[in-house]
Image (cartoon, rainbow, N blue to C red; front, side):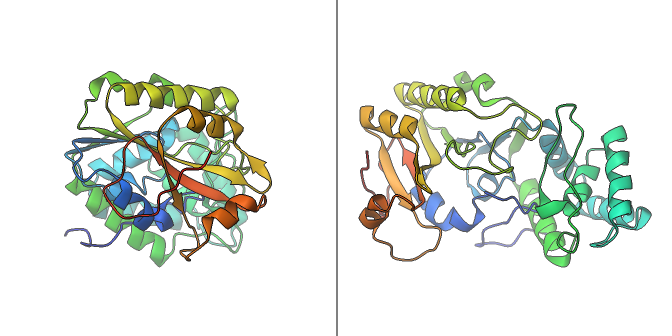
Length: 303
């Protein structure tokens, strides 16, 4: 079996804030030839799984998530799906059985069986991944909303098959501890960090692990400058403006640097970006690159 060709693979996780819907705008802005692709904040792996490169590095500091992906990589599709479906039967998981979910959540927190995390996410509220400070999974039940349905199963199978086609590895470093010295000018780093000026359980960067604050924002931008000094290409997803807020740290950084700002449109419409900039309540999502993308995509300077 092989993964579907010429079609973007969707993460098996319904990852809020994931980039699947923006892939057709983002990936054409990436370099044409990539030796090692680093997905520094991999999350649901929507970007890295769809990149053609000699080597893919998926990195995220959410250790249990990375361990789950490693099981996807090493296990057969059949064994993975069988494990998931057997757990569902064993704990009688459904959209309405909250007690079964809580019993299984307690079981996972006691055993930390790696593949069980996926089963737990499938029945959690909005498919969210949350851990408390003791690293206990604490997302509430997704009553009448979440389940391991046919679409999720389909996405899982295609994702695993695509993953097995790639030369890839999974790492669990916090972004500032990643060893960038292994990279050279033919490599590429993609960053989709938590967004400083947006709010939500999916993008606060914490989930029971390290949070995201202005300090982390400054550190990441310094790292990107260092990559640029070493002639290593990077791309940064972020928002400049959101619901009346502005990311002043990002704006001031862009004023000092000659990086390219590529505007993205979540609605896939022909928007007037100057109008969006003037509208203080608009959300302006961008892909910032330290190179000029080899396309005729929209590209504007905004500071």
